[in-house]
Amino acid sequence: MAAQRVAVRPEEIRRHNLSRLLRSIHQHGELTRADLTAAMGLNRSTIGALVADLVALGLVTEYVPSGGDRAGRPSHVVAPRPDGPYVLAVDVAVERIVTAAVGLGGTVLERRDTAIEGPDRRPQAVVGRIVSDAGWLADRLPGSQGPVGIGVSIPGTVRRQDGFVEHAPNLGWRAVPFAELLAAAMPARLDVQVGNDADLGAVAEHQRGAAIGYDHMVYLNGSVGVGSGIIAEGGQLHGVGGYAGEIGHMTINPDGPPCHCGSTGCIETYIGEHALLRAAGVPDRHGPRAVAAVFEAAAAGERRAADAVGTVALWLGRSLANVVNCFNPQAIVVGGSLAEVVRLDRATVEAELDRRAMAAARAGVQVLLPGLDQDSALIGAAELAFQSLLTSPDSLVGSFAAN
Ligand SMILES: [Zn+2]
Image 1 (cartoon, rainbow, N blue to C red):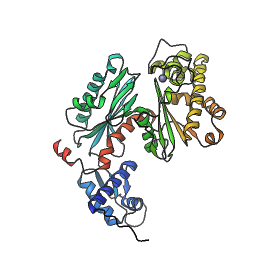
Image 2 (image 1 turned 90 degrees about the horizontal axis):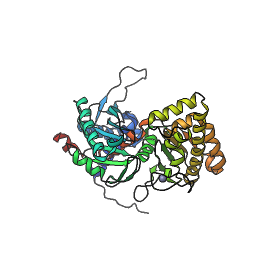
Image 3 (image 1 turned 30 degrees about the horizontal axis):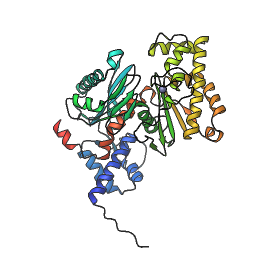
Image 4 (image 1 turned 180 degrees about the horizontal axis):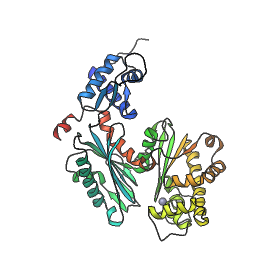
């Protein structure tokens, strides 16, 4: 059979390879030219030319490793440029806002954590906080090329294409055009991307955390609210509108407690922080300190607190069994305060999985703790913000010049 002739323009190939190269360096932090040559299947001179392009764009730097005991000429190391562009990553959670400057390679350069409550959660207040944090971060990175985008994690249902927040029940938001509000408030024109916290956490744990190499994984994030992000066949499962993964709002008892989403007996009402506090006998107190106090008491063997953690662990195991039966993942990463439930009472979680998940799917799954601790959603927000630069590394030249 005659080979089909495909017309491919050399410039398109170069841009495609430039993007692949930058993605590799972003993923691994730094790589030798020899690693890049092997990984990309291109010859050494092509790699050399592409690296020179990325150096000229101000994105990466090259150095020759000194010393070492390897014989022969050492291969040049290609690394993200320390004073190169960064993205603003924002994690808007129910009790805190974290804003960070994250460089290529996923390095957090600077960060600011702020506790929030009541009126601080209003959309305009959150926008104001992010604008102020962005200025604070820029002041601390004076030599940098500045931010090239913003990624924001929101604990709610987010329409992916335009960052419109349909419903963030635990922030009290409904129908908030958040990306639009933030873009309008930023002093410089920046690409604003908004995603769901658990979706972003899944991406981050898959790329940089506990689930590297697991192309079928679920990240279950549980604090006040409970949500999940799903990686299937190595890609994200979004659903048609981007709302997939609301495992916290699967009904497990229609006669159960009322949920913020408007339904009753959702998983969240059994494993969210309010359920833990209720079971521990402290329903009138809330917030991270009250939750931490229950965990401390449980770890110290205090009966009521340990029983409360055990009850949440039981329902967590049941929830995970449903996840295993639906998605047949290799790994489930349990994040947020639910990670502490797994640490304190893994036996109950695993026993309930044994009891309720289908045997074949159960046999292939591990329950893991996050590799990025409390920063999964934050790092995922950075990944979202980096996408346009990674896709077109030479697209931002104009905006650097403008800054
Ligand atoms: Zn619900």
